[in-house]
Amino acid sequence: MNGNTATGNKSKLLAGLLAGSFAFSTASAQTDARNALAQAGAQPPAQAQRAAGATANKLALAEPATPRDWALRQGQWVKRNWGVEIVGMKPVSSGHMLAFRYKILDAQKAKLLNDRKSKAYVIDEATGIRLAVPAMEKVGELRSGSAPEEGRTYFIVFGNPGKVVKSGSRVSIVIGNFRIDGLIVA
Image (cartoon, rainbow, N blue to C red):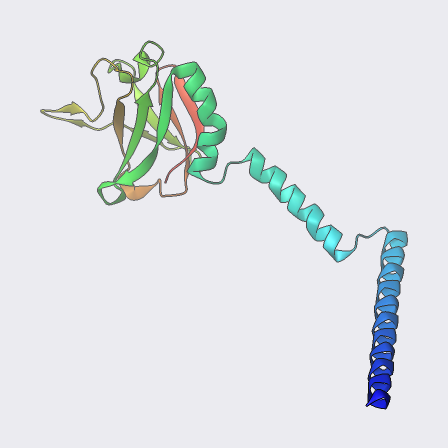
């Protein structure tokens, strides 16, 4: 029985030695490959992928990809300067109209948004097409016109003939002097 244990230990030792030498030769080959790439001025694939990912992340930071990203970046500026929180913009009425919703945080700063004398329109950033607020005979323009109250959510509906603006489109909203760019339609 002692002979078998000694043989088993020798086998384990031999297996460990072989595995260690294999790992050392693999690591040595990888180091040699990295050195050859560095001399040629190239980056190893893993480093190149990380560098490409970092570049993509920088681009993603510059261009918000989702409505949530937009709200985190430009939304803070709008809150501070105009006293409103942008709830979002989404297609309604089978895509023939766009509903823009905003919440009033500071009624005095946000007074312009509910002023019906201020013309409101959306500009599709891809095509440059302007979309206006439709006016109904008995109702008037499809937008809130009451005095702004803090904590309430208001809306403006824009026409979207031909369904030019779709989910994922970037738009600019202009209401008098108020202008926000790069809003992503949900």
